[in-house]
Structure formats: C-alpha cells, structure tokens
Image 1 (cartoon, rainbow, N blue to C red):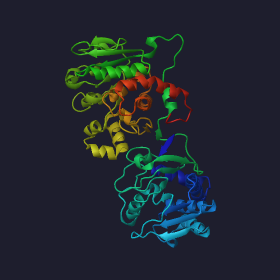
Image 2: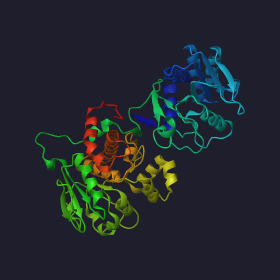
Image 3: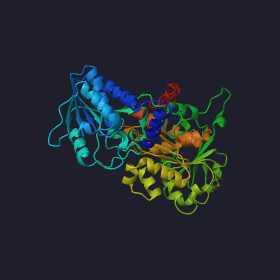
Image 4: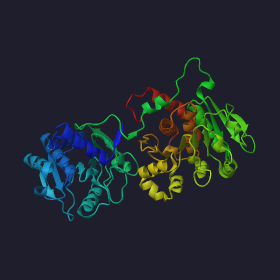
Amino acid sequence: MILVTSERMQELDRQTMERRCVPGLVLMDHAGKAIADRVLAKAPKRVVVLCGKGNNGGDGWAAARWLAHKGVPEVDVVSLIDATSLQGDALAAAQGAVAFGVRVQVFDPAKPLPPADVYVDALLGTGATRPLSGRLAELVEVLGRAPGYVIAADVPTGVNATTGEVPGVAVHADETVAMAAQKLGTAVTPGCLYAGEVVVADIGIYLPQEAAEAFVTAEVVRSSLSRRREDSHKGSFGRLGVVVGEMSGAAQLAGLGAARVGAGLVVLGWQDAPVPGAALEFVQRAASDGAAFADCQALVLGPGLGRTTSAVSSWWHTFKGPLVLDADGLRLCVGEGNPCALDQPRVLTPHPKECARLLGWTVPQVQARRVEAARAAALQTGSIVVLKGYRSIIAHPDGRLRVNPTGDASLATAGTGDVLAGVIGGLLAQGAEPFAAASAGAWLHGRAGELAGALYSEHSVMATDVTNQLARAIRLAEQSGPDSSSL
C-alpha cells in the first residue's frame, strides 16, 4: 500500500485535474461523499462538521450536504470564517450545503460546540507545517473537549501530513478518511497516534503503481523468503555468523531469530570461551581473528557485544558479505575503522537513542521527526536503516522508505531487538536483497510479537516467545492476500 507526502498528493491532484480533465469541484464532491459514508455508518442523529477556509473545509461542506441529502436529522457546520468569505470550489460547496438546509454558524471561542454524535474535522487537512495558532488552535482545543466520535478528513488538523510531526495542539481523531492514499504523516509516530483507524477512499485521483514511500506488505515478505525445493539441504539456505560478546544471551537470541526464518546454519563466534547452554543446532567457533565466519554469507555484529567491541574492531572489516549492525555494533559507525566506509551492504537497526547518537540529535528530536531521522541516518551512513519503535521505519540511502505496520507493545521487552537483528541477518544469509530483508524482517518480527502478545498477553511476552511465533508469522504472510499489510 503506497503512502504519499503532502507535496506528492498536491502534484497528483494537479495531474488529475489538468491531464485527466477532472474538475476540482468533482473531486471535492467525491471526497465529501466518502466522508459522509463513514459518518453514516455510525447512524448519527446529529452531526457537526468543522470547516476551515481551504479545500479541506470544502470537503467538509460537501460532506455536510451529502449528510443532509441522506436524511441525517440535524447537520450543522461550524465554520472558522464566514462562508461568504470562501473562494473557488470551497465557496461552491458551501453554497450547496446551505441550499440543502444545513445550519451554519461561525466559530465563537466563547461558546461550546453544538452537541453531536459525530464531529467531522475538515479544518486544515494536509496543510499543517507549524504549530496551530489563533482561532484555529482554539477550535481544535474546543473539539478536544467535545464528547462525540471524531472523524478527520484526510489528516487530523495539527498533524504534519508528510513527517508525522505534531508540533502543537492537534485533533485526536477516532477515524481518518484519507483521500486517494494514506498520507505518510498518519502512518508514522507521532502522527499515527492522532489518526485512529485510517480508511482510504477512492475519489477518482490518479495514483501511480509505485511510490517512494509505502507500507511493508505481506507480498514483500513472501518475495524475500527463500524457495524450498525438495532436494534442498542446509547449504542451500546460507550460513549466518553471529559475533558473541560480553552478553552471550543476546547473540543466542539473534541466532534463534535467524534459524526461525530459515537460515541453513547459524555460527556463533565467541571471543573468550564457548557459550554454555547454546542451542544444539548452533555451531560454535573461536573468532579471535574473524576467520570463524569465512564461510558465512552474512554477519550480525552487536547484540550483547559490550566491552568486546574493541576486540572485534581489528578484524570485522575482513568480512566481505552483508552486515547487520545492532546495539554496541553501532558504536563502530563512529570514529576510525567505520564499517560504513566499506563497500559491502549494511543494515543498521538503531533504537531512537542509538539513532540520536549517530546523528548528533537528541532523542526527543528523533521521536518527533522519525521520517527525517531515518532518512538522515541512511544517507549519512550509506546503509539501510531500520529505525526501531512503533511503526518502525526502513530507509534506503537512495530515498526510498517503508513503514512497518506490524508490532505492538508486546515487543517492549529485553532481547526483542536482538531477535530482529537475527531475523534480518537470516534473510540476508539466504540471499535476500538488503532493503527487502530489512523490510520483511521488521514485518515478521512485528507480527510475531503481536502473536505472542495475543497468546500470553502484552505484559508477559519474552524475547524467546517472539522467536517461537516467527513460524506462525511466516505462515500468515504466505497465506495472506496480495495487498495485505497488516495480517
């Protein structure tokens, strides 16, 4: 499922109107009907539509007319400005609503909003780029105190449609009706936390088949999994090396993740002593000079590394295959011997604090501007970057970006990041292209976390529970439809 930025959506609007000769008022009417259909699903007796002065407000006026036409007993519009001051298509839509008997009032900060079963936020749409102020901010604050169900038109007012930033007050919607395509800012945090359920409405705008931004889908996962012929053997599916550091349990969790997604063999390379109690399926080798991984197709470096970072810094660069750098391995990306100066493919899996360290930002800056942070880290390091967290972002140095729709609070426990590194490494060892491996790995890891949470409750999941659910996550990806993003 594609995602679009505000700028891309404006271009697609323009192309539809100019090249395909679709009048803007027709698109506005289609948008209004799409909003009205979602409102009608709630069987409301009274609806209040909040309309701004631009085209998003015009969508709201069109929705009010459709609601009156469909027989909703009471439909009110609370307009940010006097309707006679509107221009263009928005004015025409307002005139149509008034002709259908919609009641209109201009917003008065001293008065509460009329009571309603459903409120429609058609104040700003994709236009938010800075904190709301003045009467618009006041109206959003008043709406926040209203008790009804809230449906946002395209983007909740106050959410940046491109970045997901929420720099000030914003509408908390129960549902968002996205016109033509979901906006990137409502797919990532913090914006997605304001959007509620997002429903995409086809309003007749031309959409390309490909986009620079998209959700990770089950199809991406299926295309990244190795094909299993009847005459396959363990050598058919690659060897993954995992560097064992100070905290050997982390390396084992990475190995379990790799094994569960199909890596033919996992090699644990230890520095000081073999790992006691390691899975019987793992091979263990001394790795003081890195020769232990000479026959491996991919390498995971970082989980549990701890103080061993300095010990491996003299040999890891001799490995020529794809690298997954996580946790303490990311410290190698700063200073001399930076792995990001090498030619081999790399996937970095930072959490927000690690990403902040890479960029020289603060953690709040990363969390407020996650899209920008992921892209900046990918460009700076020349690597695929998986910025972990709710709605993890996978960024490519060439500008491509994917948002992972799977995963929940079940993954908020120690060791799950190590599992993710191993899952991605296991896919790389089997020959998956790095951007696809990072995307598919994030999807499978998130889905396995959801399954573990459903089985044990979000409070009780441990990292090994996630590894144990990876097989079910793969099966669900294999069985889901071609456009599935959340199954």
